[in-house]
Image (cartoon, rainbow, N blue to C red; front, side, top):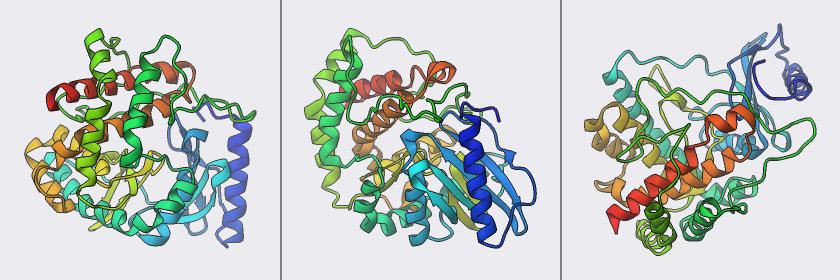
Length: 353
């Protein structure tokens, strides 16, 4: 496979999957088919006597994904991948294969995907709200509104100091023997246009350093972030699972059924943090459809300004944690991501003060 996973670790996961499938009465009938390199995971499609199964091996930084997916699949069957087996402590997830993602032919078809997926996302989040404590115990990052201001301040301090200490969502690259930090994958392709999370697209690679004015705005922004979090909390919606990678590439719409995949980049927090990601992708495709997609989700008009600061903080924390787990070419490929999110935060702080 073209990934930085140690081959013995991946082979061990594949043997585990084959054993689980055999016990279930659907033994593997041939070699696994790699599904492309990823910076934080390896993927295999395994042929069985009952069709295909899908094996995902996640990086330590996203090791909560198997248990999160299992919990959601129990609550919302059909809306997330069906879990056949999971080994959360090792980051192994075996699901029914949901097949290749249908490729929309044009913008109109993409908008139709967003409109179909939005209410399903909202339903999953409503159903998952009682699971918030279990999701946190599973290792899902805590992005609840009361903790975001302090985490924002710690992140800014860590990223603007000469010798940044690790932040609350910023584990050091793991050292686990057979599973070294990941490297060598290319950044993801989001189609012809980059996703826009606000006025400007977010960068993945090279990014100029923050200016002195940007650093000053960020260092003075904790109170503003706290007020934004309090305003969002006033909506009264309960904490739930937040999908921080809820873009078109993880939405599978087929025969009027919607499946939302890839819950690695998940957290626990206000549900509209996910909606903000989805609407960012909508804006990259067809800005005029944003209001209709928000309405399909069930959010009132004016949601985007209310979520802007908390959502940017949440994603910056996620990317800080994720990129610090990489080494080599992969870390270089994503080198500018945290800086780009902090720059977007500095801009939002200036525009919303």
